[in-house]
Length: 178
Image (cartoon, rainbow, N blue to C red; front, side, top):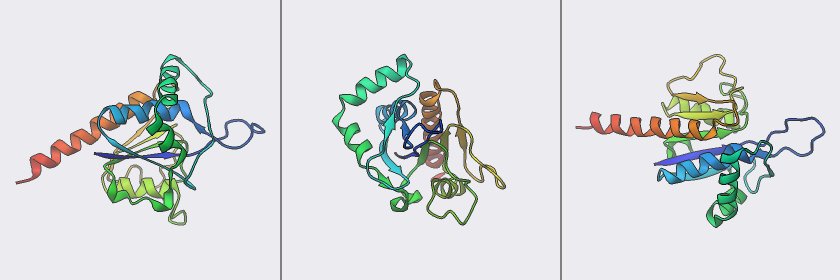
């Protein structure tokens, strides 16, 4: 099973500096997917290395950060993401978006994270977005399953819900095959 993690830099406070990926929202889910035997592919708006910061470090985030710092594969993957224009939704079973994507149903944003999420939802694939300020007008989640979360303690439970959704779809597909 293959999951796409979309990393969108955010800037929560004016004057805080360059936008950065909220690492406490990304690292725990990344390891949850890997621990569940998912192949994880990281993508970001422009690809390459992303500025990353920790802003809300709880005990779970601290443990995940410590694991991250000791994991050469994770460090390599986070420092060399694909650009969104290099991603083909058909190559993935699901997506997990860290940060706010553009509106998902605006055709003029063809290479945005929102457009990519729209393609996955139209294909009936589950998508999780953290935080939940996603614009769903006018089609809602379309044919897919959309999982959203806001709280700093919810990234891993949201990732686990996405893992369950993907596994449930895999079982359903196997049952429907002759």
